[in-house]
Length: 400
Ligand code: NAP
Ligand code: MG
Image 1 (cartoon, rainbow, N blue to C red):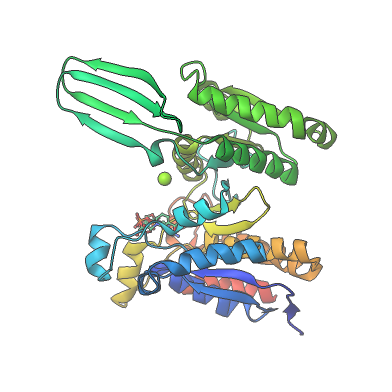
Image 2 (image 1 turned 90 degrees about the vertical axis):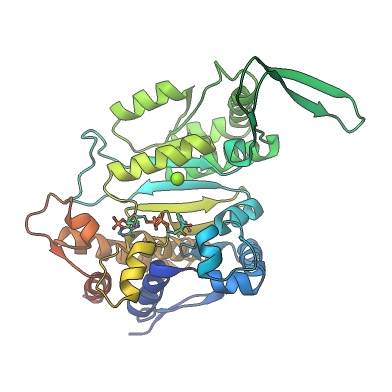
């Protein structure tokens, strides 16, 4: 059979360790037999980032702005141990952080549901998508250990030199203090990405902060969302039959537990970090979650939400068999190929993405899965497959 043709290349961001091994297997066994795969390749593996002084990460993000759709493998964010392991010139920043700063987006994470892996929360019959703001707050904070009595203030010095001060606390003993910020422009693009994604999926969107306590900081988020909704989205939402719902974060958490899912939950940076791990674990595994960065300009970067699975990689290097779950990485590719197909009007590419996802889920539903899922499945007698054998089992179904 003739291979499916592509017109515009995907930006391909290769990565590290076990996910790099999985990456190549997916291309060899699942994609290239069926598609005349066109990609612009960027090697974000730590060695090449180090060799290019991390230029390759910036180049790959710039390429995403040019081509529109990227697919990214998990990458190492170096720490002290990695400095020695890879003999690094410096402790390069997180590639995800660099890419998000350039694309200025929001990360959407949705559990992948499959029969036989039941959510821990019984009434969660539909997956809930977490939309995580990816800029500022505690992730860009300034903090201080306060050694003893004294005054801590926030000081804003305007361009003309005038100062505005706000007392944080009069310390009469030791303690800690923290300063955080966010930007109207970033909150605005967060809001627009969320509203656009809700329209894309045809799902309601919830947003929550602690504006009753944080009357200026969190309230700014609430106001910006409401202003943009009223001015740009209210009519489109009504037409699409979907809702924007704002509430307090503690009320949202309580309601989420009682809801059946099927909506988007927009979260500030920290809330989204915490809640996406809670939601994915409740649906079975970190590897059973899709993740896509959507920029306000409509650029898309698909990835797996988990890391490079270092522990499994070291086993692999020792020649031991691994059973690493490749579902999130397969879905990163299918998501990117589907989006590319939609943008380029390639129906067969879109249909292939659907078939690849179906083949992956069918494999699990037939009882063939990796060890992480075999441990928790409700299916009788699951067959635990190795990393490679799971991908081959999907390939077999894809060909059938
Ligand atoms: P991790 O790679 O997510 O793995 C943590 C543990 O979760 C694994 O040891 C494994 O548990 C389980 N796990 C995660 N993904 C799995 C999969 N696909 N299949 C089966 N089990 C899976 O996190 P990490 O080990 O803390 O981090 C390793 C590296 O990844 C770090 O260098 C970090 O910087 C990087 N990282 C990258 C990204 C990204 O690029 N998006 C995100 C997070 C972390 P068991 O060992 O119990 O089997
Ligand atoms: Mg986290």
